[in-house]
Length: 318
Ligand code: SAM
Ligand code: DTB
Ligand code: SF4
Image (cartoon, rainbow, N blue to C red; front, top):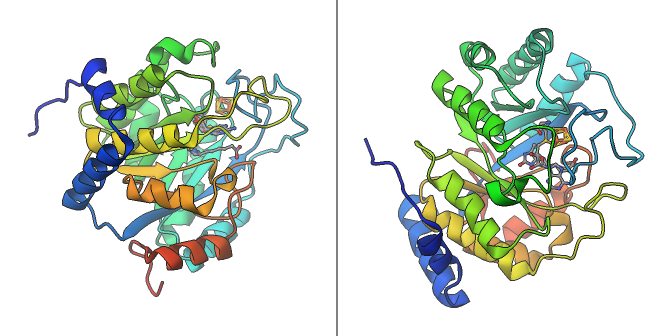
């Protein structure tokens, strides 16, 4: 048993604010103790229910409250899930993550998703779903079918959270993560940067994640994809070095965790992505689409990884 982490804002901020080269050196040193420095994990995303979400997350193109021109869709037919899983496997992804624009799934919704999880398992991929809030019983039901990961993000620090989402509170998110953890499912939880938050608030998010007991196995760090029609469209762009600092600090605070360079890679050039890997990011979303917005193409990513000498973990033949 390892002791629970008790990071405070002062010590976490001290790390985050070091001279850039010192921070990068420390992050890379920690990274090498806990991970292979030249491999990354790759997950492919599929939106199984798109749009018309009742929540008001100010960054999200899928909220029914904002006119983003998104077509609302019913639950995806199971054969489309199978095809997408096969294609992801073929291209070298090892985990398949299905997302639904729900506040929470009904028990009937959950059974439909379970059929999809089984189809993905048949393709010998790890499974992850992100469906909104979950009850204790629903988490146990997902665990009983062997779901590997549940994604539910804290998104930002508790202090800034109310500026971004009003339809559910921070504690609701923590409760869902507790249910998932108690059920024995691996936890994937992270956040978004570039929402207009302060440096303290970026560090505040990392503190919340790093002080969880145990720490999430997977921490996605998204850069806001600005979508016209959402309240955050037009927000001042985040200094890219602040993004890299957040990744490096996450690596130092959560040494054994997979830190995922998530949404927003399309808006980053390749040198910036390489800096993120150097800072300790060791996972990506791989595939031409995130949930509703675009991601770099397979060819672009393959070329980048080849140029950097990075390979995808566990991808047979790749
Ligand atoms: N509805 C579920 C929920 O909110 O938990 C699952 C899907 S939701 C789209 C998953 C996560 O995607 C959000 O928590 C947020 O961190 C991220 N996300 C959504 N829109 C984004 C955007 N425009 N840019 C970056 N990340 C985004
Ligand atoms: C996460 O942290 N990022 C992914 C996944 N978990 C579900 C979603 C990113 C969504 C970006 C906006 C979109 O494509 O709709
Ligand atoms: Fe709905 Fe999830 Fe988007 Fe929030 S982030 S509006 S809960 S789909």
